[in-house]
Image 1 (cartoon, rainbow, N blue to C red):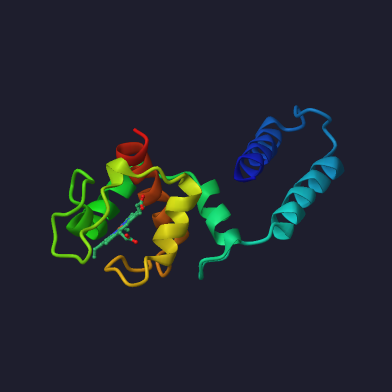
Image 2: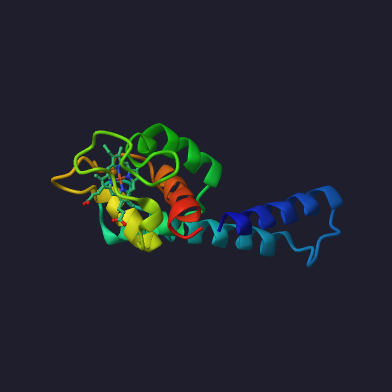
Length: 148
Ligand code: HEC
């Protein structure tokens, strides 16, 4: 969606700068196109940013996770229990944190697990964090430990 807007933006800038050399050359048509694009944006249902619903899980999975940002988050928040190398057991958490390198969870299931936490264990819910950060850390964990 944002790419479409970017392209439309480029075309409009090109038309303005080119002084009528743009394709079609009809200002009315271009205005209509622009309005349509914005209408579509408005119609898009926003991603839930709280809770553990399936909609929120799907939204987080659909985001582009940034591995470098995910590493920083993991290092700060998760490594205390799961260790730098993901094998777990390097803290006093009860039970020892799971060995992520032995995990067989899918991306959806990792997001669901991280959102929900694990009741009765030291693994908290990370639902209060922003969707993008959860996407980043999930991408890092998947690409580094679960299915490298
Ligand atoms: C306080 C310790 C602690 C922290 C911090 C922690 N975890 Fe965990 N984690 C655990 C424990 C304990 C389990 C095992 C839970 C269980 O057996 O139900 C676990 C399990 C998991 C699992 C499930 C693995 C599997 O295959 O069953 C995933 C995925 C996971 N953690 C990811 C993370 C991520 C990502 C973070 C950081 C955002 C994180 N954890 C932070 C303790 C922790």
